[in-house]
Length: 186
Image 1 (cartoon, rainbow, N blue to C red):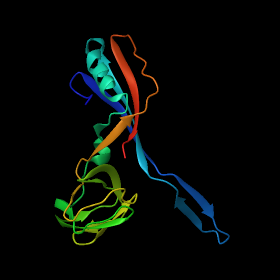
Image 2 (cartoon, rainbow, N blue to C red):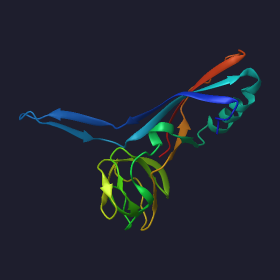
Image 3 (spheres, helix red, strand yellow):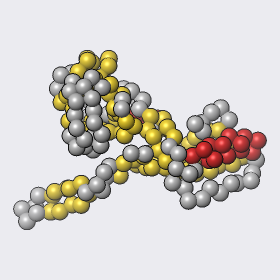
Image 4 (tube, rainbow, N blue to C red):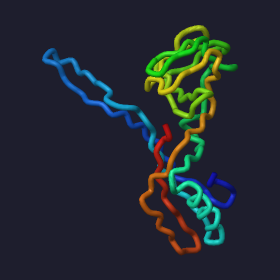
């Protein structure tokens, strides 16, 4: 990936996009309906010295044309809750499901935790606290199958993204910065 001792990544911004429409009923109740798949957009800056431009050029050459790359979602993915141990699904689940029964851990897996399943890179959010042996509620709904016994990664998940920059302007300065935009590869 791009980040190393010579290239520093700064101003990382992870945005959750969930297409929806809202409506207020005659009774006054507000309703929200999701009309598409939730996904994440990523923005970050690469800061480097002119002598290290080859590192940035290498990244651009590899990933500018649609090849996905992994990105550590940093603080958004750091788990600081009370769950300990391996979180595993207890049954096979089809795409479209919004909950997966999990076991194998102690403590509580808290709402707001960003997770991934072993067989695909999509990032999901836990929407209610869950303990071992109970259903873990998710947003968005599953986009792929989850197998019986599949591991749920809840500590430092790495998102998979595709660059979406239309152009890459190179600053020809001794200290340079390039801004990148990307979208989740789902």
